[in-house]
Amino acid sequence: MKKLIVLLLLLSGFVMGNASEQKQLDQYIENFDLTEVANMKISSVEMLNMIEEGSAVLIDIRFKEEVQSWSIPFAKNIPLNELPNRLNELPKDKLIITACPHNDRANIARLYLTMKGYKAKYVNDGLLNVVNYLKGANAVEFIDEVNKNKK
Image 1 (cartoon, rainbow, N blue to C red):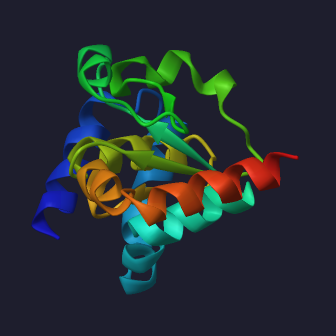
Image 2 (cartoon, rainbow, N blue to C red):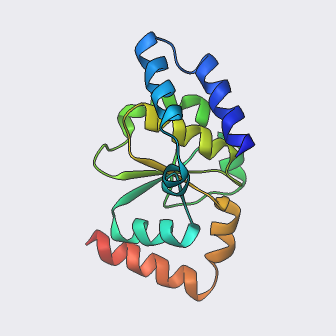
């Protein structure tokens, strides 16, 4: 929780520019409760189910160099520092799920998107756990479901 409060304070200083956005962040913090704590994150398995259904989009917010080392083919890569200039690539009608290896940058991206009017969550157990889960039969089943739902 301390991590989140520090994150919010940092964002209020350099992400939010005008008074309207600052007021929006203030209201978000004032209304922040245990329900929002639960609503802001999603587990790897929940996220994968939503991707299979087509009701969510996964945004990998790692830097390009990181993605070159290993990638998630069903994720859209938008590095955190490019997010403000690439919002037009994100659908407003689906849940946007942000992810990074653990969850620190994903949480920043989620807050930013929330302030911009998107419904967003972050993968609370990180991409490393997603990759760990998607091996063997789980990988085959997941890809089969994604392909079936694309048809």
